[in-house]
Length: 309
Image (tube, rainbow, N blue to C red; front, side, top):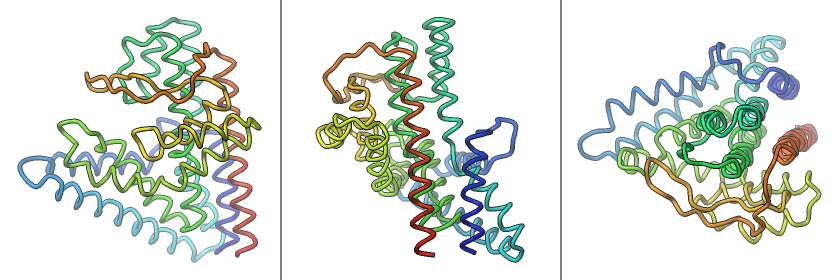
């Protein structure tokens, strides 16, 4: 079982780097999203929304784990089937190629087609309003998303894959999908999505800090380490500030500041003091950091897994 998982992780990771997530392909996250939308439609109304939201989130997470556990057990009856199924699900569970591609698309649209095109492309990958952002703010938002989603989309799934196999990896993916869909503090979701947001904070606590350390290590910038300790805990999220601080330190730039969400301005604390004018080189450099950090974590995880297995 351990050898099959080892091979599946390597193959799945390579597939993600080569292919990413083709939009036309069926994907477990689409099923997760449809399930959450259905549950939210029927439960997020009237009284006791916190209880109903917690019940839905708990059921979704447990069902995700059990479904993938049963699939994994069934596939384990044949060595080659186990490897193929495992590689496909590892591929589905990672999102680094897609994340990097989406950030590069923002930069391409901004550089070639101007502010409106950059704002529109950015709106596909961030929750904040983008219609008033200037070029600096667009690039800053893209890099903040790049660093935060390195944790959510790559390091955290790998972390749970290493310690609990594919079932735990997809239980985490369900947690993350729940948070991305209902974990907002607006009028619609502040009660119903409260439990989902808290669970996501717990699941991402360790991976976010590992991500920050990886960014600092692969960037080889002492300022990145300094930023982690100085700014990591100043973000409104208990986790997002750590990878953002690490990347801001690697670039010696400033992240954070006021952002608009759902018509309301959220005054985020600044991460860093240098108002560096960001450009395409900083975007490409940061994408390279993401790739190096994910490869480093993969190698370390596989080595630990080999010696413990």
